[in-house]
Image (cartoon, rainbow, N blue to C red; front, side):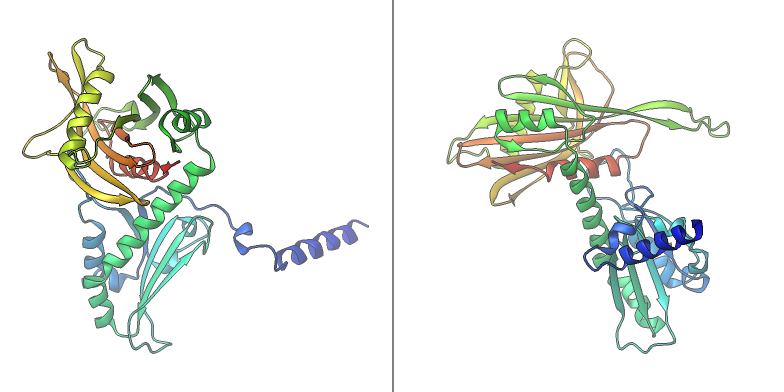
Length: 353
C-alpha cells in the first residue's frame, strides 16, 4: 500500500511539472548573492590572458556618481566552469566567456538568459570559435554587458520595492504629494509637515576587525533617507534647471532638516572635488531635473558626517507644481555603490498621479 501511494505521488509530481500552463520559473529556487556582484566563469587559459584582463578592466570601471572615494562598477569573483556547482550556480549574476570547438561561428555570440538556474538571475554567455574575435569583443563590446547587468539589477530592485512597499508612506505620498512612491517596507515616516516629509530606514551591519591594519570591528549602522516636498511652479522661471533645483534643495533642507547639533542643518557639498552633478531629462513624459552629489551638515558649528544623495525634481503640469524626492545615504564604514543603486531604484518607482 505504501509503495502504491509513493507511485501515485511520483506520477502526480511528474504530471504537474509537465503541465504546459505552469511556467518553468515556478520550480526554480531563488537567486542568491549580493547585488552588484558577478560570478565570472572562465577557464585558466582565458582568465590568465588578455581576455580575462580586459573583462576585469571593464567590470572594474569607476562607478558613476559622486563618491567620497572611488568605487568599482561591480564586484566579481571567478570560477573555472568545471567548478560550477549547485550552490554557486544560484548566483544572481553570472558571466561566462568561452572558446568553442564543436560549433563554427562567423561572429561572437552573446546569449542573455534570465531565470536560467534560479529565479531572479541573469546569465550572460559570450562565445566564439575564434579566440581573436572573442578578445576583440572583450575589449570593445563590454559596454553592452555592463548595461545589461546594470539594467537587470535595477529592474530587480524596482520590482521588489513595488511588490512590498511601505503602505503608510505610499498612502502619504499619494495624498500629500500626488505621486505613487514605493520605499522599503521597513522604512519609517519620521517627519510630516504641510509640504515636506522625511522617511528614514536604519539597518545594522557587522564588520570584522583586523589586528594587522588596526581596523575597528563591530556593529555599525547604515541609514538611508528619503525627503519629499512640493514647490509651486512659475512658468518661464529657471526652476526646472540644475541651478534652480539646487537652490530649491538648499533652501528647503535648511528649514526642514536640522542636524542633531543645534544650529546645524543638512546642506550640499560644493567643492572643486565634490561638486554636485545635474541634468535635465524626461521622466515618464514629465520634465525633470536630476541632482547627484554629497550632503553635509552646515551651520554655525562644524559637524562631521555626510554621504551621497540622489534627487529627482519632477514637474506635475496638472497641478502646476514641482514634486521632489531626494534620497540620501549615511554609512561611513561602508562602500556606497549598492546603497546608491537602492536610492535610484526607489526614485524610479515614482509615478505622477
